Length: 96
Image 1 (cartoon, helix red, strand yellow):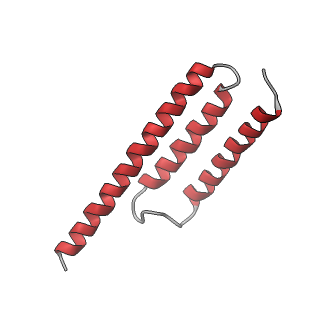
Image 2 (tube, helix red, strand yellow):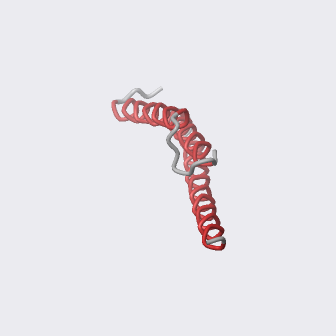
Image 3 (cartoon, one colour):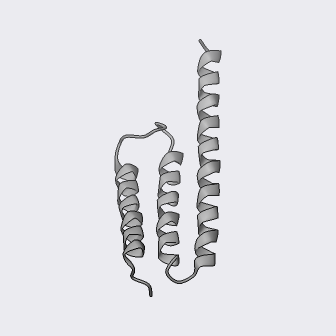
């Protein structure tokens, strides 16, 4: 197990992101009100970031795979949230 300062800093950074994500998930403030998708996206991304950080010590190839999955989920999630925003705006404009 490699406990170099950079690995320890990366693990601390991942833990901080998980804590911040947990606070965001339980807080009443949402980017997209009445839709849990943003909370789920934040939670999954923070969790995958923590897994990636832990895997870097033991299995670099698997850590790279988790990184790709993390960014794919994040990209798809952002696209879905933007499409929902566009759909909501279109519906509001339609009935005005």
